[in-house]
Image (cartoon, rainbow, N blue to C red; front, side):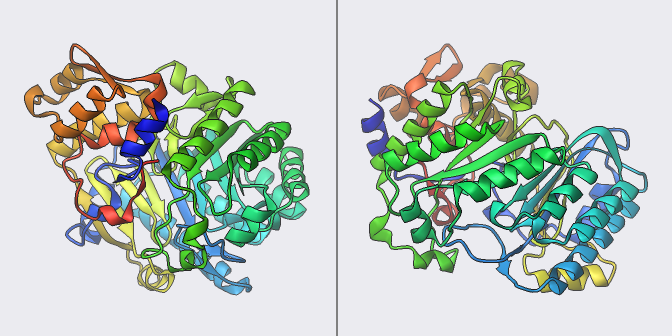
Amino acid sequence: MRSSLANTYGQDRLPRYTSYPTAPHFSASVGEADYRAWLRSVPARRPASIYLHVPFCRSMCWYCGCHTSITRLDEPIAIYAAGLRTEAHLVAETVGVRLPVSHIHFGGGTPTIMTPETFADLVSALRYSFFVQADAEIAVEIDPRTLTEPMAEALGFSGVNRASLGVQSFDPAVQHAINRSQSLEQTAEAVERLRGAGVGRINFDLLYGLPAQTVASCLDTVETCVALRPDRLSVFGYAHIPSFKKHQRMIDEASLPDSLERHRQSEAIAEALTDAGYIRIGLDHFALPGDNLAIAKREGRLRRNFQGYTDDSAETLIGLGASAIGRMPQGFVQNAVATRDYLARIAEDRLATVRGYMLTAEDRFRADIIERIMCDMAVDLPQICRRHRWDPSSAVVDRYRLDSLIADGAVTMRGDRLLINDDAEFLVRNVASAFDAHLGRATARHSRAV
């Protein structure tokens, strides 16, 4: 049945639902003044999270969908890091208290493109502006090809305790097709350096659906990764949207697998990882049984945010840096995307927010449903309707879509409790989309469901 479901629903372009509503629905109707007001109302004793975006790399990977640019110089990165330190101070000053922080995530680009001294100074500035809890998770995304011994030591010295290493694929043919040559030796050396520096939690990021990729090459990559025993793996489907990211035009579309082959690759990876002792977490994460993510799943505490699946329960996410998105109890905010525009606003002692979205009661209701579907592969609709005081008869937006998924055996309704069947969990985004009141606008920027 999996193959027929992949054929039927795999071409749908749908959000990954790391937020609801998703970023294409943000607008300039929410700006700096709104963000300042929201920051002033942040509950002072509840832990917040911080995301910092570092939009620089040494080379461009053609599959990349991130906001990043290429530089060989250190000076632009140092200037940008100074902007991050200033923005952190501006946000803390606006909040008015030293806000407790439970999670910090450095994303990119390549955050470790900074010099060790610059990175350590930035973390020190965060600790000065916020109260970073002793048990806070501090995570950083890393390109193993450029990680030096001094940088690994700086990460450990700064309290980083989780590192996500980009791997994507170890197949030389795939690496050539995506302009990312990365050997096993480089990756293994990065893991050894990190663990030696005290960064004990290691994540790997893999991709399927890449040009020239096959099920066999996916399985070879998994076997190699498992030998290094990362605590957690993220396995994403490549999103080919050259109209949005022009460098993706360097990829030969004829070499891309179709939806059925993408599905075979995804399921082969999942089976190999579960056979190796990893727990499947939602749509695209895998974790060892003792990892925080696996524990959160067992205890029913799994959440979803812009980094994917998480055990982070903070209601406030502060986004720092160009294009960074923050989440407040009232809604979402996003900084200026262009680095030059971001730095210009920060230099004027202004918050860099240029757009966002103010949540309605219906948005909160639907976000709750979609998050539970994405995290639990099930949802108790009456329970959520009661919590939000919502009429159950209007919960489903796309009844035809949901009824089709039920008729095709992907979804089972037990009373008013929705369950995604075990062999159809890869369609979780399709199921969630039946409750999305915003879908249909800007779908071209979303990736294929399979």
